[in-house]
Length: 500
Ligand code: UN1
Image (cartoon, rainbow, N blue to C red):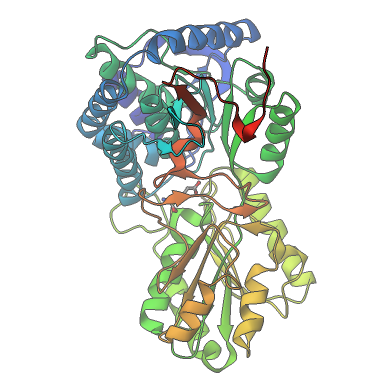
């Protein structure tokens, strides 16, 4: 039988990834069957320096290309992604263990952000401002920033790069990508797709998008380097804190999208049919490995028993297995460390008064496959406040809506949140200034699966960054306030007089 790794190798060859990438020390592994496609070369410290230098040189040329022309390159990238969608999505499945539909969805997310960025390339709006001085114009202009480092996680191995890269490129910035060590193959494939787009575009300088395969020392080098004005990092809060500290030390800019601990509040008026479906997708989709995964279910005590019974029944029949198979909804966790994290959190939950309602065990005889768990907790204990990147849903009950909102906000993370209710009062209170404190707040929609058009990111330990849609592009540019004097006088602001 062909292993997942064999299939991955043949896709890489088809996408034009050179054989020279193999023969190093970095192991690769498919979570589907544990097979390895081989070992990859990692970038040496000298190569990292050369890549940064090349990126700085590319910036000199790229910033002179008009933004709508830069958009043309991103349009071609979107075209190449469309052409390679099936292969790239399959590779996401093989390397990250996502089910087929989610692999395709991830590449679709890349295509959509490219489309968004193409339009954006003609809309990098500034402002004109009223000057207090006669014969003066004031305006605010957004200028290209410089090389942007993108540090991405295994769970969205390619979409998060695209969110950053598509915006950075139209904003006039070259990109240096350090993907997760757990998903280098999808990164190599994406880089090959980018090279194809760049080859079709006469104005693309060499080194516009570069890839650095390797461990955390590469991230550290990028975070420390003043030639890299923006470091955009997605991953754990621990990683983000290290990046933020290093970048802040040189007064650079970081854009952080870190841990989430997302909740759903279910009220007595909620449509429970919809709630059950939303909970199932957002709590067990991607095997609980999205930043936006539903981790805390806060249910009104009057509807709790009925809802829990329906969830347990749904969890009992979830098709778990090889994510390449049609009908499977749950693939593997990324590796054994993730299984350890799952088991440790469940043991802690039990110690802290939790009652396991369903799941919580390994699927015997397979690599890192588990049965997703629902645990009823007496309160929001320490383990509930911690983001465990695995399919564990903690259930807590409440009787007062304000107390439920307070509970939803009482964790260190602030990414995504939602309420299921048919009450306009509850819905609007949840979305008000004293409601959810998260970057994303939904009504009658689960916390995961955001569209690219909105700004994506969160507050508190989630890091405060915003990526993807809305005006997230502003993080990739520098703001310049410009004042032009077209008079024959030189009046000073604030009426200051200084005659020489
Ligand atoms: C992530 O998990 O890092 O909203 C990103 C979602 C996806 C993106 C998740 N569109 O779930």
